[in-house]
Length: 174
Image 1 (spheres, helix red, strand yellow):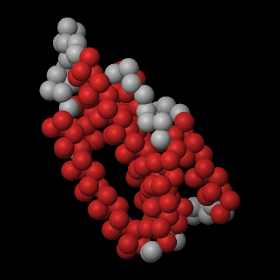
Image 2 (cartoon, rainbow, N blue to C red):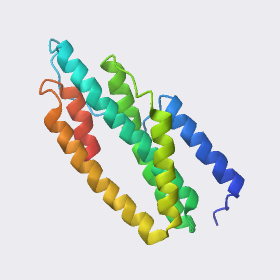
Image 3 (tube, one colour):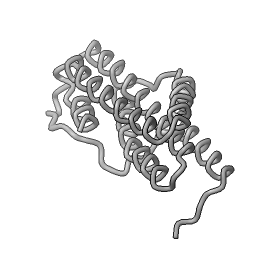
């Protein structure tokens, strides 16, 4: 039998997850997707800047995914649904780590507005979770559809020579 968490435990866990999502470089459970890139394959400064901007947007999306799943887990009425959201959040942690690492490799940084993005997404997740299981799960399904379309649009926008960023985005879209 799985022990139940108190409301205080759940709130502290959500706070911990928010701080980790916004202020730390998370560790991935799976290795970062790699592309076969020749050693003499440098990106132009313009391509590096374009890729950095797109990867920053992708990183913001992963910060928001952390918030949505944490909030929905917090409002879940059943342990099974809570576990589902916690598992989904854990899977998205890989994407969060990969986009953060890619930003570093490009010499770029995460958005300075990540705390605000997290708070807004957490509020949306709370609202969806409060509307009941069907609405909450429907919200997740539609969000994932939108994210998939967004990632495919980024593949069209990424510089063709940025094989490393492309490898990350392709894996995130799977």
